[in-house]
Length: 202
Image 1: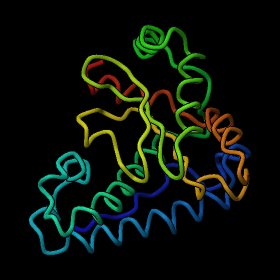
Image 2: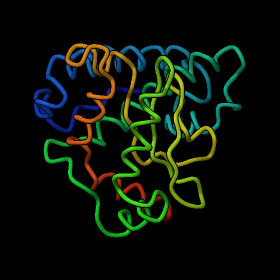
Image 3: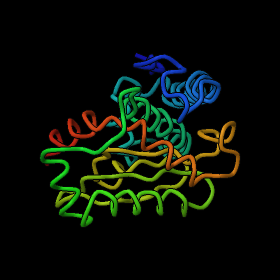
C-alpha cells in the first residue's frame, strides 16, 4: 500500500499566529507530498513497500544500496513530518505534567533548561535538519539530525521534533530561526509527547 500524506489534525490556519497558514499549506501539501511521492517511487516493487515507514527508517540497512539514499531522505521526510503535524495543536503550549515533566526535570534540570537545549540544538543545526527530544533507552536526551534523518535509525525513540528546514519558517520568520523556535513552543501538544513517552517505556 503506497504511503499517503496524512490529513492535518487541525485547520491550516489553526496554529496562527505562531505558524502561519501559508506556510502550513505549502509545507503540508507540497513538501510533504513530494517526500511521499519520492519514497513511494523508490520502494515500488520491493518487499519493503508495504512496511510501515517507521520500520523502514529504523532498518535502513535492509534497504537495497541503490535505493537507500532516496529512502533515507524521502521516507525520512515522510516520517518526520507525520510526527511533526501530530506534535502540534491549536491548544498546545505551556508545559508538560506528570511523568514526562518529572523525566524532563531529571534529565535537564528544569523545563526551561530543556527548552534552552532544544532551541540551541535547532539554532545550531547547520543547514537543514531537526532538533529532537528522544528516549534513548536510558532516559531523555536532545539530539540534532541533518536533512531528513530520524533518531529512530540510531535506535532512539523520537518524542518531539522541531523542523528547522527553512521551508518550515521562512515565509513568516525569514532568517530568524530562533524567533520561529520561540513561537513554535506555543503549538506543542504535550499530551501527544506524553503518549509517545509512555509508549517508549518512560
